[in-house]
Length: 163
Image (cartoon, rainbow, N blue to C red):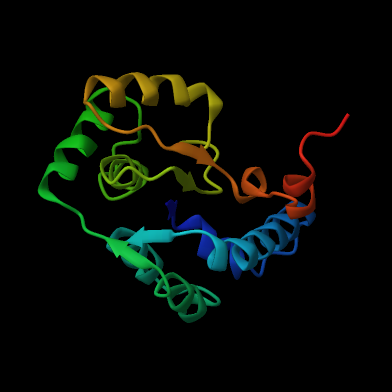
């Protein structure tokens, strides 16, 4: 099960023209096209809420894309987990942001949390702290990755390791 965080639909429809942003948009689209039919993709009302804030280009398309996913419930205990992430300085103080996505994915035992947020989520320097706290809390530790890290060449999968 793969938890899809807010940045994924945002990059899928990004109108930014910088080369690195165009690349992220294309990688996101390629990953989504492959994963949507092969994997169990899930999200949460937190993603829908974030995508609903303000006004921006392609907002309705972002919301439509996210609405294709099953939404995991935000159980009351998840709020406690968010508080622990914030208290331990693992996530920023915004309780409706990154800490909430991580708590939802961890509580529900997602194998992956896919995001383009490399500052607070897909950050190798933070992962050890996340793993340590989740272990102390008795929570699953999802792999926190970008779509690029989830790319797999199906031909390579069938052939096994290459020399």
